[in-house]
Image (cartoon, rainbow, N blue to C red):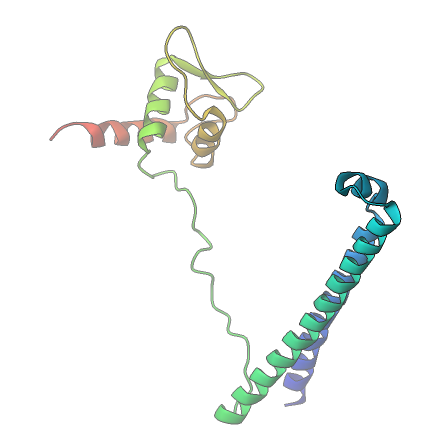
Length: 184
């Protein structure tokens, strides 16, 4: 089973490599900090601020690398223990993510706010302002409380088209909402 050992080593090497790159990213970020701005903001000498930033960067880099080494060692130990207990090397399971298809569905029942928005858009009392993602009231009457978020919610469910018009699916959603609000 040399290939499994190779995979374990590759995983550990990969974790260490990620930790090293994180450390390098910290170094680059520290190099890009304007020490004069930091010194002015904190009210200290620029050389003192430079020392603080340098020490903080070195600390973060060393801890990132230590974390990478520790995580890789624990992963290797876990794999070795699993192999010793079961007699079979641990292989990654290929399990489909049960939440892959999770998200808004066009056949959802609209919330109270979404239903009111669909009704107001359908009647022409509200409109999506051209060139924006905002709902605005036409004429008298109140507008929505969250005009931007509401448009986004309606669009991700395909209830509202890019042109700001209610889609066929949106009209069906409005019908479902109206039917759910009718007294029995």
